[in-house]
Structure formats: C-alpha cells, structure tokens
Image (cartoon, rainbow, N blue to C red; front, side):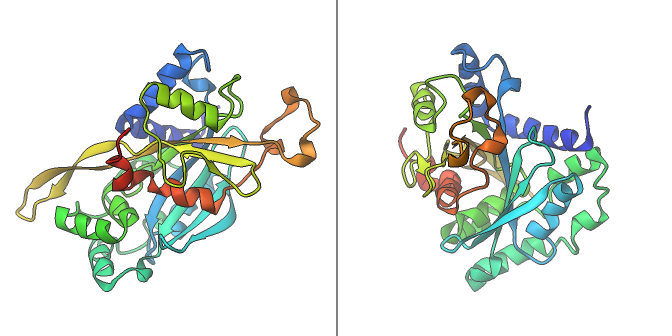
Length: 303
C-alpha cells in the first residue's frame, strides 16, 4: 500500500535521478550484466541530506519530517575538521532506507563565512517544518525542493567554497538529496563486495571518490563503502544586477555499501540472512571521506 512516506521518498528519488545521470548509467549496466532484473531489485541502504546548523533550520528542523513517518533517531557523529554534526535514523520497516542528516556548525566558521551564510538563512524567519502539514505528501515533497532563500551570487558561493565546500554545496543545493546508496552485499557473485563492485563500475567509466582510498572500511571491518564523484550541474547564480550567470558546480552522487554479517550470526545460512543480521549504523571515518565526493579536487581529478 502506498503511503505518504512512499510519496515523499519517490519524489526525492525522481528529482535526484534527473540530476545524477550516473544513476541510470549504473542501473543500466547492472541489468545488462545480470546483477539485477530491474531497478526495483536494488536495495537502497540509505539516503543523505545536508543542512545549515542555524537556529531555525538544521537537523532539528529537517528530522521532524521523518520522525513523523516512523523513523527513529539513532547515533550522533561529529566531524571536527569539516565542522559538521550528524545523526542517522532507522526506518519504520527494513524495506525503507536508513536516513543520514548532517549539518554545518556555522558558528565554527570564520566571521566572514558566517556573515555570508546568515545573509541567506536569515530570510527563513522561523522553522518552516512547524507550519508544514507533515502528513501531506505533496506539501512535503514541494517543501524539500523549494528555494528556502534567494539564489546565491557566484562570489558568495566561491568565498564559502574556499573555506567550506560543504557550506557552498548547501547554500546552493539546499535540501536536494545528496546521495542514495546501493547495497552490494546481496548482489550475485562476484559483485557482492564493494571492492569487486568498484571494479565493475570503473569498467564502464564511473569515477570513484579516491579520498582515503576508493574503498572505505570501518575499524571493525564490517562496513565497507565507496562512492562516485559528484555529477557537475549547470547552476544559475544571481549576477547582482537582476539577472543570472551560469556556472558548473558539484551536484549529487551515488554511494555503495557492503554490510557484513555480525560475528554472532556467522553460522546462519546465507539464504536466511536479513538486514537485522548485518552491521548497522554508520562509521565516522568512512563518512568523513565520503563527504569529499562533492569536493572540487575529486571532481577535477582525472578518471
């Protein structure tokens, strides 16, 4: 049965796929090579959002949408060098993706960066989710894809990017879905590991994030991740004279996750393994490097 949550998630994925051509390219190759029969066979491990950590926005605002629809707030994460906080959210049913929401610690940035950010976010006078009918799928879908503040100027975007590429990404992209994640552990051999799936991706020209290595492994060895480099999108900026100017910037990307079976379930037959038997949650060390999928040095790096 279709629900409001389904409608919201479908709206996010539809617009995301329009902005990230790599998705169609990857899915097409997965079908052609017999990894899946159709896109519907893909398990979406998690989706992620980026936010500005200001009083009327940030995690505490955006999470309200998903808590309303049965998600449960779980572990907190802190990324010191990137000035970020984050939480992940467990879904109401295992058929839904986990959610990861991060926010920029705006007060940790330089006075000039804060001035730029507040000049935009101050246009949002109060928490917009407080006046949003969270049970109205159309309203929520529209909200997640609307302009929360005016389009930035290229100068402001560039100044922010020189200090925090995360800040620059959010000031333009706002709540656009940052990435979705293909679970690889249920794929047929030999593609069921991130290492082998990466080889498959590179065989047809997908550029992978190399920060910290193309394969990111948690200290317990049970969560392995990788990601593409963000797709470049043509973005319209305020030219300061009532018009617009176009520049290419980082859009969104695709992530891949392999969650290995927990040691206590090692003797369970492979055919009986479910999501509950695998490593859950996230790993700060992995996520720290995956954030860099939208960084200019990754986008400009040769394939």
